[in-house]
Each structure stands twice: as structure tokens, then as C-alpha cells.
Length: 312
Ligand code: UDP
Ligand code: MG
Image 1 (cartoon, rainbow, N blue to C red):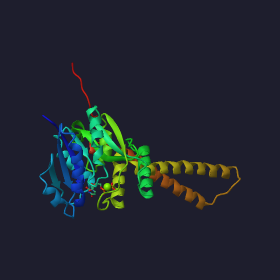
Image 2: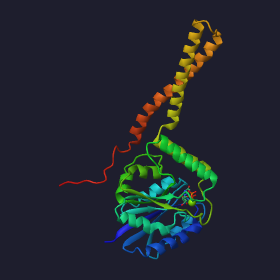
Image 3: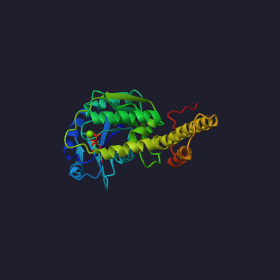
Image 4: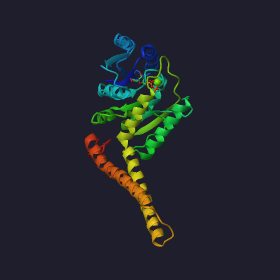
């Protein structure tokens, strides 16, 4: 029996890109006919006629078409998860954007890596990309902060253009978390990883739906699912204030004792107040530790994931 490969495509208002995308995919998979090919569309409740275009397709040359539609615009991350969930019976799953920014002509490179035993293959946007400077700076900042404070290492330019083996898909489904950063979790899952660098062309038709607001939410979700960064910052600040205040009080008391300086009660009051602020902030740091434990328990991410096993 042929092995099955599903290409999951999240689509939000992509009506004009669906057919060009299928054309390009078809041109590639025609030479990869030792596999059965399925394209699984996830329409994220588009407001144009994306759904009409997708649902009127039964087959596209050799490719079987499957499609689901969200009842509301839940976002790309849930769409990727939905695509994965409905494709776990495939031997491998490829994820790609609908706007041709993840070039289908790279599929054979992903396949060769998979055939060579890699299980978790990701596209990396090359630094030669024509991002606007704002996107470049914010993306760099995101990866720097994430890698410094987070629990996982994310390669710079990591995208959702991926091929994962069915084992990874199965492990992914065990996650119970509700705020998903898809690429972070897939990266966290590990297995035999490799990366393929590519330059993303401009979007074919339409406009990027990823608004600043959506991107900031994604970044915030990423920070909070992989680190307690905001609380830790408060805690660290509190500790610094406490140390500073203690030194200051010591200085005030000593200089006053030896008679070199005299401080008004107001000065002591101000220092005392700052000291209190430091106490409150550093308590937040301690609370962060407890919340961290609760977070780990609630999210219930597996402690470990097994990739291979031998019994003789
Ligand atoms: N997308 C989606 N839901 C959304 C926004 C985007 O499913 O709410 C899809 C979109 O159709 C595309 C992919 O996610 O296939 C990437 O979106 P976009 O091109 O807007 O983002 P960018 O290229 O800027 O990352
Ligand atoms: Mg795009």
C-alpha cells in the first residue's frame, strides 16, 4: 500500500490563491507518485468565497481534497491543529500557507529528508528575506527574548512550513494546552530534526491577514506558554530594589551615626516606602514560582516523549 501524505493548508480569505497553490502542488507531486497525496484545507471562516472554491473541488488531478470550515475566525494556530487532528492517519503531514509564501517546489527537499529518517523538518526563512524593517526587527526581538527567557530554543526565522512524521502528530494530540504556539510545541517535541532554509516570495494574491494585533497576541501567548517572563521581570526588579534600599539605609544610618550627614524623617520615609515596593515586587517573583508549578500542572505537558524503543 502506498504511504499517505497530507498537506495541511490553513486558509483565510485566500479564494484567488487556492487554484494556483493546487497547480504548484500538483506539478510537484506528479513526480512523487509513490505516495498518496491529500490536501487538507482548513478554512478559518473566510469572508470571501474561499469555502465555495475549496468545497467545489473533489479531486485535483491525482490529489484528493479534504476540507473543513471553522464556524468563526479562530486563527491560524487552531487551524493548524485542526488540520493535524484530521490527518493523523497519514504517514507524514506537511503544513504550508495558502498564499504560496511557502513554495511547494520545496516539497521534494522535505520528502528526501523524511525518507532519510528525519521526523521533524522545518522551513527557516532566510535572512535574505524582503521583510519590512519593522517585521525584521520585531521578529529578531521575539526570537532573542524567547531564546533568552523561554524553556525552548527556537531557531531564528522558524516558520510553520513543516513536514512532521505521524509519530510527532500522535504525540502532539496528547497536549492538553489551549493557548497553542504551534511551531514552539512541535519544536519542543523534538525527534530527529532538521531545517531547510528558503526565501519566501511575496504573497501571491490578497493581503496578509496577520495584523499587528494578531502577531502581538501570538508573541504574548508564546512568552506565557514557554516562560513566566513577565512575572520574573517583576520579581527581579523587586529584588534589585530591596538590595538597593538596604544599601541606602545602611549608608544613611552609618553616616548619621558618625555625624557626617543628617537626614530628615521624610528621607527615611521615602526609603521605607521604596523598600515596601521592593518587598511587594519580589513577592510577585515568589508567586511566579508557585504559579509556574500550577501552570506546569494545569497545562499537563508530558514530562518526556519517547521516540524509539528496543526490546530484545
Ligand atoms: N490564516 C488563517 N487564519 C487567520 C490568518 C491567516 O488561517 O486568521 C492563514 C492564511 O490564509 C495563510 C497563513 O495563515 O495561509 C499565513 O497567513 P498570512 O499570509 O496572512 O501571514 P504571514 O504570511 O504574514 O505570516
Ligand atoms: Mg503569507
